[in-house]
Length: 358
Image 1 (cartoon, one colour):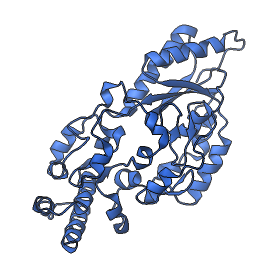
Image 2 (cartoon, rainbow, N blue to C red; image 1 turned 90 degrees about the horizontal axis):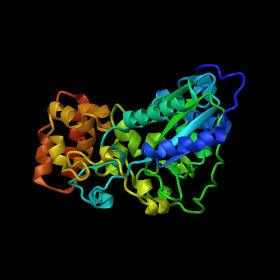
Image 3 (cartoon, rainbow, N blue to C red; image 1 turned 90 degrees about the vertical axis):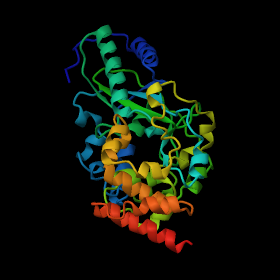
């Protein structure tokens, strides 16, 4: 990062207004400015890590205090531009899919194009527009791509509040959105944080299939279906498998029941629209994908990070939880001699579950 000028006569209040306008033109629904003091969030993170609630996500404990101290991650950082982009796609009705055990449920954020590159690309354009207006300055762009405490940053930048399910919430549009940041050496005037509005509501806590929200505002990743189906690389713990239902990539239950999401609007971004009918797919069809088909149909998608092996692992569990049917049993039997020990073990569990459920 470059050193800021010794004398600076810029009108940063006016610049922030321009940044908001440029951000809106680039497709962001809200752009706010935050400061770099994340001491409270650092304390919460350290307690969470000490309790082991991050599971196998070792990266959450790496990088020391860089995650919670922006100036250690990017020296010279004075302000953080935080931006929100809505992603809720017009898709098959979520509860309808969840209640149809023959179909697979994929978290709504993963139905379209992978957001990481899209958000970073838009933020890079925003950063360059700032440079075009004021000249060279120091910055780095992030979107879930580095040790950054995105939600606390967004909260103190006025984008919303962290709800009891640990997602960021807004009164006007719920929680169906992505976040991204620009760390900058510009002394931008920060926005005020907004107050929390969860009140006495416990809908997200009550609906969680695995009781992963162990206390208001605290999620134990080791129980979270998103962690189990995406982050976990080994076997899914057997006691939790029946609770996954037909969720094969992530989980949205806590967002689906949140009263504030009644106000959510669908995204205008065509890149986030569902691909390959994945908003309501048949489990048996997905389970039949070869590795080549998996790679081809998940190109440019967040689903690609799973790999074919864990894709089959997750679907095997969902098939084990599916309603009785010879077609489902036959699909499982077709993978019973799969080269992967991980896949074979989950297929065997699913077949056993189906045989004992009769």
